[in-house]
Image 1 (cartoon, rainbow, N blue to C red):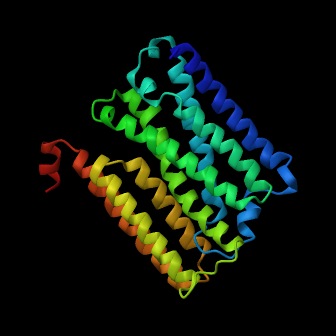
Image 2: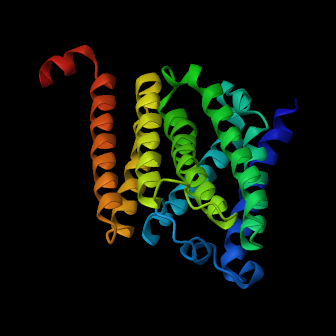
Image 3: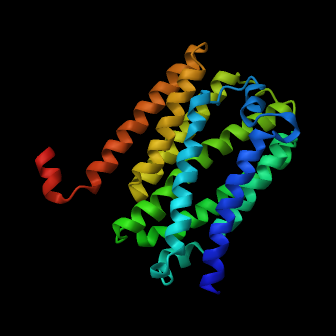
Length: 257
């Protein structure tokens, strides 16, 4: 693998992704805004509109990664080599998803967002062996951006699935929308707990906390969903505290005791 080609491809991939995302809402594709499409479905696992501002943070982090990995000093960075072409693949899935979403091809959106999720999981797992001994620069410019992106992709995949199922005519069977949303929130907390136990990843947990608070705000008219989202957010906050404590040196933990 030519590292120069890969590093150039990473830069081109994030630039292309940002441009496509901007055009999707400026034009917009198919005359529809990205957010207005999800608002058209009465599903409960959808956060308030302000929550989607996290895309700005995601693209800022990914742009920082692209610039950082392109620097001559990073030519032999093992973290960049571990990521390989999976970042380029994730950008391709991201852009393709936008076209499928705006043209209301919901079954296809599931395939594409799962592709995005798998790409990010692969990157995350490949980086996991380097996480403990990462330099501060690698931690903030490689590991953290992908933790945030994976956290949001987790939430987005669940939300996308609920919309695709609703569009296909499924209404939850014997369970109500609210009950299914509670189940999905529990799954989200379980995923966060798994990540916390394995990686102590505060950034990943923080994204879920942000999303669950947004769900509580958006679904305030549905007490069961709002209450479950608040409980889930509190559970995530506890996991974040535990992750922070576990990251502290032994002396720091004793001081807190």
